[in-house]
Image (tube, rainbow, N blue to C red; front, side, top):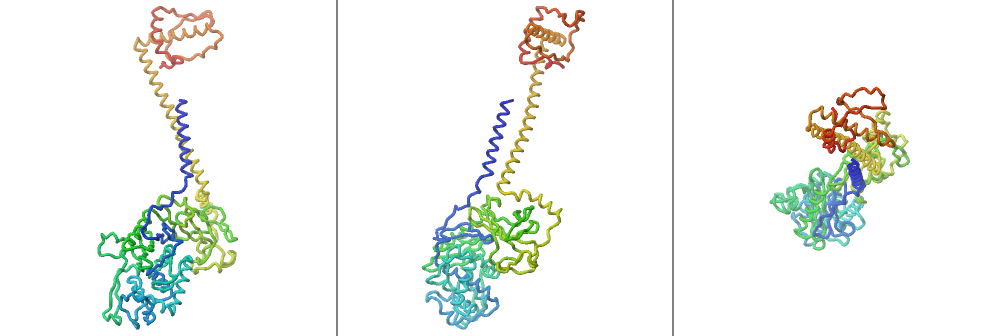
Length: 555
């Protein structure tokens, strides 16, 4: 029994050790098992903004070529209506390189809608359309370029990224990093009109001076458009994008793809034909297969549950007064959970909703993976977004938070959120304690079961011994021999007066009748033991070994 207990304790200690190692293990590593043939590339999640993989994507800038037109289209759509009329000027027609072509045979004096110009820009990469749109939007090409660079800075692009023209043709300082281009594409494909236009496979424009019957064209991006669905260059999840090429830039590519509710963007710089299509596809497949998105509002409970007061910007808020901006996600490795991410509550900056009081920013091994606003529950449902400079005192009339819920509901929320508000170390310790407790309960059940099983086995052994003994004679003879054995042991004890007498035990079976002892308890009358009895008793002595008394054999 002691040996079994020792084995059980060893198992508990080993299991506890394994649980401790698992509980405090580092988060799964960030996947990086991919690569491309191009010099530079990146893939980001379009919803969280997380950079999933990059190769020379942040510190090195390259000429972008015609993927520049994505930024051109974004700036135009933010300042113009689709049905406005664009007139092609001599400047628009001539501000291109001599060998850059004129794909639609446009000429000065042609007029197209902004929408038709955008189709020709994004699907067919017409450089003259880029210039005409720039003049229409800003009054001149240089003024429009200033708007492009301002927009790039607004989107968070580094100072390594700069644009010299709206078409993407050669420029002395026209360079972009792959990551900055991904930021631009992310903003562009969040624009519904731009995404709709860029996702179209073909388009037809009405009559122009050189095309009185109109002209049609199709998408040039092979991952998006194909006549051979089995082609290795076709990727069904890819729905939009832009190609580019210059001798100095090599082949460049931006691809937007959707799959299982997720949206990814890949960028390829300084690639080569046709490998750059494979590179773009490789990055997208990697992003979809190795990562997942988690909805923040549906999984995060910190700051919005429990009873701990939230202190921010000199104001105090009850968790029941707060909510998390809906429909925001973080991107994690497929085998990681939200508990593996690091959460930081940051102050507001830039543009934000009127209800916002802070930003929940998430990182994974120091890598940004997503964010969401921490907001007061619906106090200004119809107010527009506010900037940091417009923030008033939280105690002012415009900043008064909504009334907290009643105490009963707060208490229920507090109990329900107790675990979620514990720090990660506390949760791990509590989980470990529960695991050890379950092991101890299981151990106790196992010990009870083992003892019961041992008792059953002991009873079976005793029954077997009894059958062996009874097999040598009738029941009455067996009982007589047992009585003789017990009297023999009593005689042996009387011969050793210094040894404590063994307590008497009752024998349930019927004892042989003895005559009364008139002389009192000091003088007992013993039955006569014959030689035959002694021989039979000795024959059975081996079967009696190992038992404390004869009660084990009684009925």
